[in-house]
Structure formats: structure tokens, C-alpha cells
Amino acid sequence: MTQAEEPRITLEDIRKNVNSAGYFRLLDMQVDAGEGGMGAVRVQVDERLMHAQQTVHGGVIFTLADTAMSMALIAALPPQTRFSTIEAKINYLAPVVTGELSAEGTIVQRGRSIAVLEATVYNHKDDEKMIVARTLATFHISASKQTSATKELQ
Image (cartoon, rainbow, N blue to C red; front, side, top):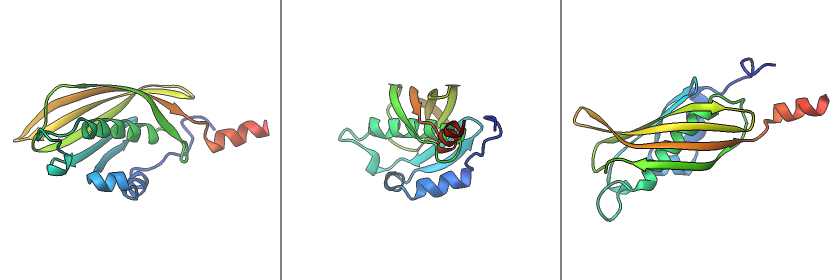
């Protein structure tokens, strides 16, 4: 089976899976896309996301970027393939105090065990869409069970 023929997880499968995760429920994060090497998530800004200076905590912004990249990657891998962020760099470009935050992640390069992804985080407020952060990350991809089983048979 070639990479293009391997089964893929659907957007509905992704949504079911993440909606059972406590962290997604805690932030009330919504998954908008997870296919074609692109992932997108969003969250409504409210007081839960603020730090003491009354702007959205940088960890929330990073979480959105990391999650959007993860949605892009999970949709490009066979089901049950495990992966994890092993390195990331984020540039915060503007503070956020109101509106909605969204993040869009894309695959820059994917190999067998390493993938590089990027994400942009936006603040939607008063019919404007402003970039508030840019992220570049490296992910480790574990060998899928299917791939491992195939190797054992050869």
C-alpha cells in the first residue's frame, strides 16, 4: 500500500476524538479543518483565557498553533499513528483582548519519522482578521502499527 492509498482519519473522526479530551473542553476549542495537509481550530476569547494583565495568555495562543499543526498532521497519517511535538518556536506579534482566535496549520515537509509544520494565529474582531502569532515546529512521527506489522512480515 502506498502512502496515498493508506486509510486516513476523517474530520468527523478527529472532532469525536478531540471532543473527548479534557483540554479541548477546558478551552472550548473547536476543530474547523483537518485534511489535505491543513488544520484549523478556533476559540472564543473570554476571561478564562486571560492572564493578570487582561490579555490572552501566550500559552493559549501557542496551544491553538500547536493544535492546528497537529490537526494538519493527523489528517495526513494513517489512523492510530502516534506523533508528538519535539520542538517549536513562536513569535507573538500582537496582544489579544477580545474577539475570536483561530489558527491555521500546514505541513511544510513530511518524512517518515519527522515532519515540519507551520501555523498562523489570527484574532478576529470587528470584521478584521489580524495575525497575532506565527509558529514553526518539528514533530516526531512514530512508526504506525500497520507499518510495523508489515515490516515484521518481510
